[in-house]
Image (tube, rainbow, N blue to C red):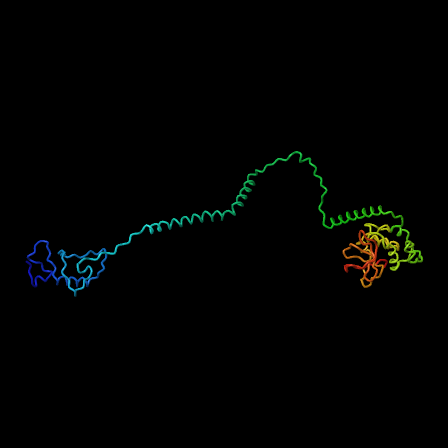
Length: 342
């Protein structure tokens, strides 16, 4: 039997009848006071703080609880709360922690493999060439053999020389002039003409005056030597050869080209002209087109053709292969007028 009364309600006074290590069971009052004391303490405890234990073991039996008494977790039973467990590292976190330095090391290696050789590639060939050249100069290792035949070889200059453009142009013009003269000589030999040439008229010209023949007579016979020069007389003489066929290089009534026709007519009045359009242009005096008269000479600006001016925009000339001496309109304005005998 246990004692009841005041002594039984005091949890701090040991029961004199109990012996050994057996603890007195908790009463309702003792359980209520223990719950109140536990509510005044902080619930959270660290892992390092040991739980307080009573000197007497807690009874396994729990006092019946009333409806008015709140139950607090852990405090009513006198059990100390456990500490929050520390999370252990997972396999994924350990793998990430291991792979980070590996990725950085691989990236640094790739950068060094590609960037560093490219930076030194531009300087490598020149450095190698300079080193090789310096080695040759320092060692004096150049050696060669010269054949004995080289000493007796002909060292005379060849046929080439350094000339200016003007000299080459003059040579080409001279060669072209020779070819033209040869073609004209061949054309003159082809056409049989036994009359006077321009040279004959120039050689036999005198200062004696003579009466001019009529137009009908002059059409059948050349102008007599010593006929006074005048532009109308030149026109009358030039008209005698209308219908003469065009012959390249021709300068006689057997066949005319443009400059040969002008040369032959003016030679009959003692005026010596070259068989060339550019040279005839240089020999005459250029006059304004407004002052041109029949008998003056029309020179095309490209130095490719000439003929007698006949007034009113007309020209009398030896045109081209297949044509004949005729009077026709001037087909271009790219020309100028030259006068001879003044």
